[in-house]
Amino acid sequence: MRKLNFNNIVKDKLTGHELGKLLIKDCITGIISAYNDKDIMAGTKPEEHILDTFEINNLIDGLTGTYNIQIYKDYREIWKFLSDISVMQMIYAYVIEIAFWKLTSAISHHDTCPLEDDEIDGMIKAINETNENIKKFFLLEAIKELIARYTQVYEILQTMTAFPEDLFLYANMLIDKYNVLYKQADILPIVKMCPITEEKIQEVLGKINEVSTLYNMKKLEDLLLSENKETCIVGGKEDEEY
Image (cartoon, rainbow, N blue to C red; front, side, top):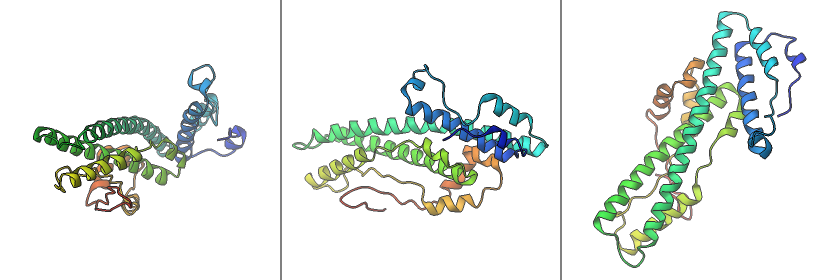
């Protein structure tokens, strides 16, 4: 993102919403610049920003009115919240990927002999735990999508963490192959990828009346998961919906 012209911005006083959005864009610009430049990542070169620190501070000092100041504070909380859930999403992605590697390794070693009962119990537990972690991963993804649409700061979408879909498909292929091989269709449950639907995100978007809701995890979780009809992709030659 190119650096903004500070003189053009200060001609008109910014609202709390405008300054808050600018803050988030500026923070994301700094992070993305570090991802794209190894010297910035190493700390030998400063991050790139759309405004300098003193320019941001001048804009903050120029805020007037209790409402604008409170809204700006809400956006600061949104950024802190986004930072926290970005770390959480990366952790979930890592945990899910490790679980897939363990799962595929265990199953691939049993193409000539079946799993023991205790091994099956452990595998079922691991798959169920992975399914729960996948739900949490996609809940965080939906929250980011929701915040980006409400604030119209679409740079937020650049903070998404990729889901290990290739491993997901591979794991389900091996599970299906194992179940068919030993003629017990449901002996091992399938791994499910259940993103929050577009319809649900749109529905929740219409229910948000306060900026502060966008950094309230409990409220967001209740809104996105309440009466949510799961559409789960389980893999195969064509994605199947459950």
